[in-house]
Image (cartoon, rainbow, N blue to C red; front, side, top):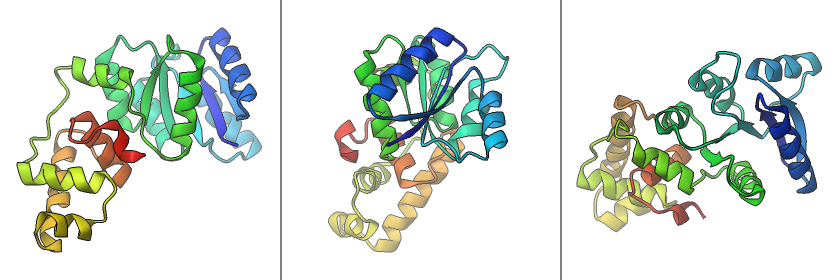
Length: 215
């Protein structure tokens, strides 16, 4: 059972999601209008972080999506749940550490599926994410070399680095150096990828691997 928190400043949205998630067997531990409310609740009852947080893209308390995602993403998988017509804001959320985005226009089954996917530690690869990234011309290209893209494609798809090196006919140290350079290049364009899951996310965003790579 996944522990889920809902943060949305529209009560009707929260009520509908709570009902759907509970029917699906998930444990909705919190439903409120702001990240501050969620953190205050956790402090008051000494609650551990939720496994997954469904977060509205824009809240009415004046906070930014970046500060909200940053406040949550270190402890929980954050899914942006909003209308997917603001690509720059969605890209900002993804860059801050959100695992993906699900439109409020999506069927409830898609939202429930996204929660299950995020709970397994997998990134979301969906239409809203792709359109937000592709529709935003400001989305920064890390300018990877051909060899760096080859190493990233195999490594992000799940192969150990030693196998990647063997498959490409290069030394392990060379493959490791390529991954280090890839991480640095993503940092330089504001798209850090500190973990292997993050690298998979970046590779999916840039079309280096397809959505089935993490399955």
